[in-house]
Image (cartoon, rainbow, N blue to C red):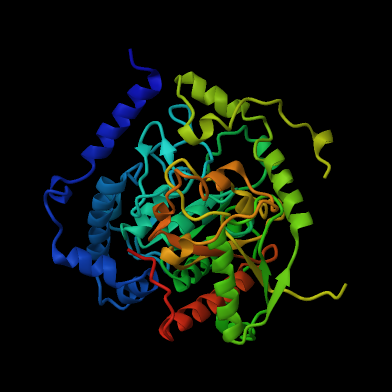
Length: 479
């Protein structure tokens, strides 16, 4: 007899399939206009064309709905399908009117389920597998990243042009890396996070690590558009956790070139050779662009942040989530099944924790390894360590993993996980698995300095693109 969670899954999948019009199934290719609209414009260009009445918002939304239907049939990237609501039409509202924006399925939408409630559950993981809706696949045929992996796959396949994910340990930044996208985890007081379902008791969320909502997109200017559009709605008047802080455009701040720090290791897991080489390339490119680069060794502090993050990830010991799972006899997702168990909840008395240079932002890896196969993501130490500090952090795609990146051996001296070692050495290892997957870097700025972060990311991104235009080998990561 099927378990209760399996019956829920079948019901949801049938309902999901019924919301895709028959004419949008893969046996019926979309007209050329769908490809033209969804591939030609980024979010900023679409907003401009719609506001100037050169594109109709209905046509734009319909084209992206069709593209999303196709993306879903190939990658299983959607949960709740809202095509009818999107096409219903509304009076023009706000700077993003008519621009397709998708939401991670932890956002509560009236009339629809979130993926964490009493009917179904999902948990934080660097991949996206859900017992109700199934596994999300990656357009690159590797791990899609998580837990905002559905957003990552959907944006990568241009089924949406701008998405909103959430991040408490890397859940925006990891999908950005895996899908060759740009993404930012802001400080948690920057973007409204109300009406989110986290799977923990309401009081516990105030003691645990705060998650942040943030954007995924194809370019830096779309990330800018997101922050500007959200700020223009004065969200602090609705969500008391959001600080009153209007978004400043680049034209209103100093255009001076920032000083960029380079953090090569976190003191927990040293990067594999291709990630080390990628940092060398980025440093060389920045210095060639006359950007001041400062080497930073913060491993003593970095490693402590990771220990603190691990302790605070599950302040209630995961017990409320396990209670939800057991109501329907739902198993843990594969990646979590060997990593998560019930623990005693934390108590308040357990909460203990030369020449100076001014650094505007610093660069470090997103992960110590390239994009791995499914369920083989190793460590979130390079993403989760900045969450206890509430530092905003973003991801920039640099180039694709190539044949030269398969070279280099791992030394015995640095800290290295067993997985990293096994994924790079040994007779059964095939390093060609990583070929043609995105290589990305992470940029980190001080708390609540998203404006400074975006400025630094734009400077770095421009330098990398300039290097490509000058004959480098950087490839576009968009599909």
